Structures are given as structure tokens and as C-alpha cells.
Length: 99
Image (cartoon, rainbow, N blue to C red; front, side):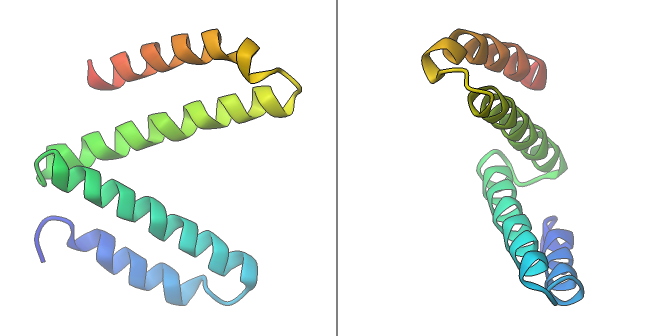
């Protein structure tokens, strides 16, 4: 099973416990995609506990940055106007995550 087995057990639980409505099935599938990304990144950077933690941190950082960009653009800020701020935020966020 390896060190990533808990994520596989979690997938089976969420698929059965929360998969009863269309919205719940969608949320479960999104979680599965996120888990797959996290697991693949963790394997690529070492496959141990430290890699799993770094993977979770990096992908959470990416998700938060994407959400902030979405909020700005949905609030009618153009992508061109958002770009300098997004770039600065990404540099700061990833420097902290990797730092």
C-alpha cells in the first residue's frame, strides 16, 4: 500500500458516504481529482511524508491564488490589470511555501 494508502481509503469513504446526490457526487469527484494531483506530485518529489506535506502545501497555494484571481476577474478587473498583482502574490506565496 505504501505511505499514500490513507488517501485511497479516504476516496472509498467519500465515494460511498457522500455520493447520494448530484451535487455531492460532483464534490466527491472534484475531491478525487485534487487527491490524484496531490498524490502524483508527492510521488514525483519523493513519495515520503515530507513529499506529501509539500505537495499539499503547494497545491493549496495554487488553489488559493487561482481563487483570488477568479474573485478579481469576476469583480470586473481585467486579466491585464490583475497580472502584476497576481504575479507578485504568486512569487510571495510560493517563496513562503518553499522557503
